Length: 281
View (spheres, rainbow, N blue to C red):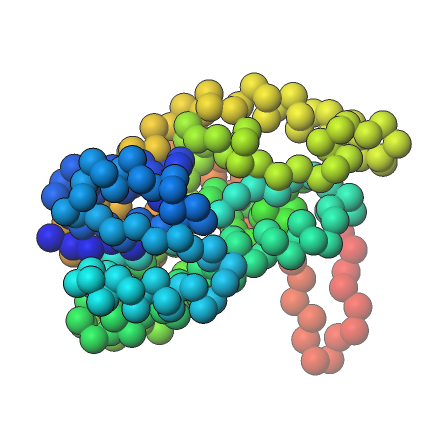
């Protein structure tokens, strides 16, 4: 039996992972910004769960949750850094406060939880960290530049961290789902104000109009079942091993196959110490 710490366990992918591992007999430290949102799942599994409020933007809260969990005998062996959300709209139109929240939640939140959990995993000489990135953490797409930036960062962080902690028996995995049925494209999605109200004065009006239509069609109609992600992560833990990268879903595979040439940086040029100008093709 393992003890999982899951952030954002009140809804979406986090809730689905929690349900899968609880059904398998594991214990879960449930966290969400509003602990009331965790009441139903905690009441269904009162012996297997404890629940805490956690705003992942606040580093001190991450460490406090670990202290309280340890005091109740819940010492994590698996961390799922799931808490996060989408911020969409042309970069030029994004307010600074929205940019700050996105980075603090999607990136800094992952960092704070890793720092808080790693001492426990090291002492045990084993453990898993699953950082929920996205297929958008491997390919950049117009209209999601800030979200791309945070997920690219999570992917890079995970790859480097996996090398740092491998000697301690800890596996770190960047989990990159494609579209799964959650409210990511609906209630959980934050939009640039000019996208939210489809402001025709924005120079990005046409892009925003296309995005608004796309997200309206996509909301909760995504093909992937989020419980599938829970089953995959559970299987990794049961096997005692996890890869550094997991790209989940047929749609994510199709994106990879369609755009993988972008990861080869077709316009990359090397400039030696003796050179001063790139060559235009």
